[in-house]
Length: 243
Image (cartoon, rainbow, N blue to C red; front, side, top):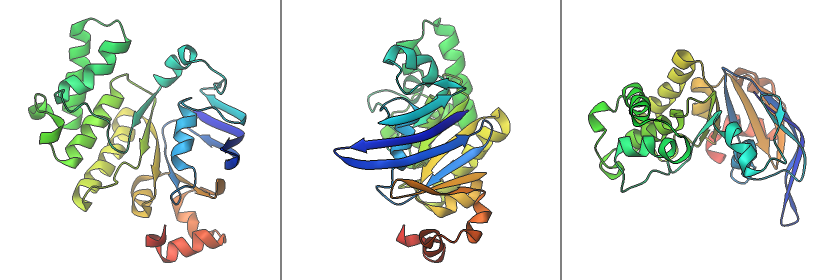
């Protein structure tokens, strides 16, 4: 679904990404793993067209998007739901209002269709009894599920997660990872998951892409990491807390 061809990105004279070429397919969970400052979240911004590469090409469903205008990007972005690290929920809106907000703002849908989609996501996320609560009254794991439900409201083909378990306790983290796996199993959705937590990768990822100093140093199944002879990968496997 998403392909990068020889993508480079410079920022303030510094090369943030170097020769990034990769293919991320439909229906699989691809993890992007790397230390802080390695360019992980930058890749998600490029996928959404929020920033443009200095040079190189980015394809979504075979369409090259790197020079698209905001208007041209709208149908592309509808194919990809985004769940931000901080959830980006509106504190003054209820759970159901948060979920339906972008539908009301961006699509000319009748109210009964918006209500149907919101109800569907509330049920899928297990939040029916919390529909009229404000986000501040929910646990961290519940707020994350609201953000995921909102990302699903456009009925996308892929979900992009930026550090989905950051700041959550182990029980909540496991529930969110199981929920992401459920998206793949029940809805057939692919996912890109940016993370620095190795347990997240081994829990649900089909493939893992490791970034180091703006370069891809590994792209394969997680269990193949043991065979990678790059010093960073080996040191990280020995001491994942050093990431």
